[in-house]
Amino acid sequence: KNEVEQSPQNLTAQEGEFITINCSYSVGISALHWLQQHPGGGIVSLFMLSSGKKKHGRLIATINIQEKHSSLHITASHPRDSAVYICAVRSPGAQKLVFGQGTRLTINP
Amino acid sequence: SAVISQKPSRDICQRGTSLTIQCQVDSQVTMMFWYRQQPGQSLTLIATANQGSEATYESGFVIDKFPISRPNLTFSTLTVSNMSPEDSSIYLCSVGWVGDTEAFFGQGTRLTVV
Image 1: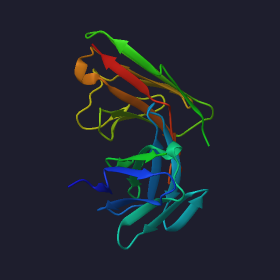
Image 2 (image 1 turned 180 degrees about the horizontal axis):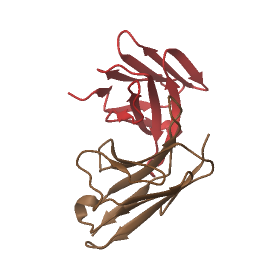
Image 3 (image 1 turned 60 degrees about the horizontal axis):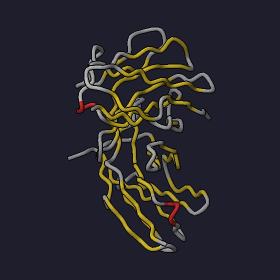
Image 4 (image 1 turned 45 degrees about the vertical axis):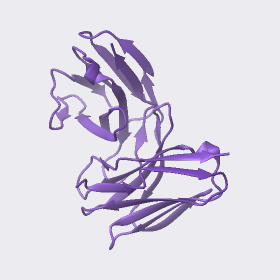
């Protein structure tokens, strides 16, 4: 079993729908990252969380440390949100990230 | 924050040859990492590039195959040596600072070996 599990692996939705991507992890962490990867390959950092909730525009990320679970929400989804979303965690004292397998999101117009 | 320039963005190479990928950062960073992303897979850490000393390689990756240089706090290179089609992947550099800081990634190098 991977240390970081994402669900779903693939998600297709219509423009305007509310999107939720889930991330569960099995290790103690000091931080959790949500990343976005576009088809060209480049990766953009969306959020870094250690507790609670963060919001940036139409994106919301939450984390429940006790349940070892995080969610990424996209409100009023748009075709330009189509990308692979990756959850990654860092353990206390470690520098490297451990990555989930990614969720491929497709938003149809 | 950090802005990373990674070159080349893509290349098609013959098997048996080598390719060097460059990662230039616009500010001094403590940590520089090199990742591989095989088709349809998530990122796997190849090594941590250490300034002025040998890189720290993850299990399954060796210096002879993936030599890494880091001459200063803003620049690193990864060489993929003696390439085979199995090396076809996206290679990404990532930078950060000690502790829980945001992760910054280069644009990636999409390598195809024929």
